[in-house]
Image 1: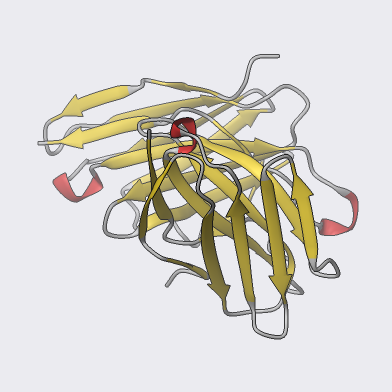
Image 2: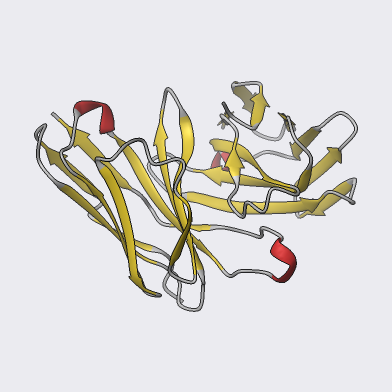
Length: 117
Length: 113
């Protein structure tokens, strides 16, 4: 089985540009998560979806960030306009939802390393 | 702030030695999980321990959980150079309805050959 697929793996852009990160979760998984990893703040949850519906977006830094999940096999994280402080590794992860709300194992993609100059 | 905090932040040992990493957390949990991250890669799930379990084994891994102290430990026995990675604990909080994991700051393990 293919794992979680993220693209691009690396992105270098200039301040003010729009950045779109993409994620294809594992087939059959109904929960999708976007995390951001930096040296200073570690791994932070940005947003997660359950059955394509955003459940918790309280981690999204500000209005410059938006995420969509138009169908069960695709999600995007968009930053517009980008700023140098957005430089980080962005991870997508997916999980098959479990009954009773228990949180099981997450499967992570390899990440998208974003550098905003 | 991080729900889980790992200790130590960095650990360097010789191949064959055991490595112990600790994790403390703040709120009541449904379960606690440990993940490994090799440099430049995504996180990989290692083991999950439920709140009603005290110890769990998987190969060379041994995890303990003390809910009264809100702490967990990960022991890697007979370490190998390939175990060099960062290790993170992650918690699923109980009762909040939140389905997302909160990750700690990680322990960087270096195993010298």
